[in-house]
Length: 224
Image 1 (cartoon, rainbow, N blue to C red):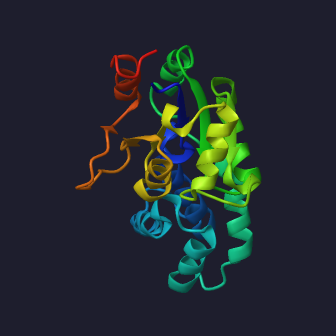
Image 2 (cartoon, helix red, strand yellow; image 1 turned 180 degrees about the vertical axis):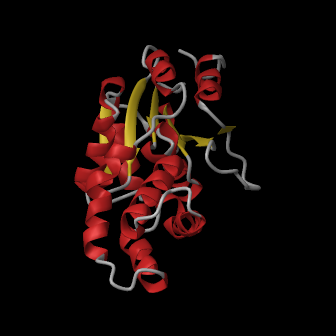
């Protein structure tokens, strides 16, 4: 029986895609002194979203591409640092997340397991005051290993004092979140609000927190 649920942060607990869009928009408007309604700005923002790869690209890559294509004098180091220092200001919590987390916490142990640099990830999580809903917060930058390395999933389970077979992993990325979890025997749940799942490999899929609530609290197999 599932006794604990571990959540990815970006793209699950938050609308990471929306946050990134608005931050790229703000940066490009700052560089160009143009309004966000300008067509050139929108074209650049949409291109950055492709380079960003749902956050899996280091921002140096994105700003290197911006320098190569548009802003040849761009200070890549400055803007990369700026992103990681200020992305917390653009965080948007997923719809119904607070209410559903509050209900889930009555029945399950909860944890966050997020890839990323220690300082920036903890700062983002704190900006939404999410810690109060979780028993543990694990950021890969604190351990120098990251998902999908099974060791980071085991660390999360150990902190919850649960066996992997007693834990579900809710993530938006199959490779980083779900494959590593499944390899040590955790129950995968694919959270696909910001992007469409395509796979011939069966994994339970939910599209929002209301469906997640139904999955864990409306199903006798999982409800405590």
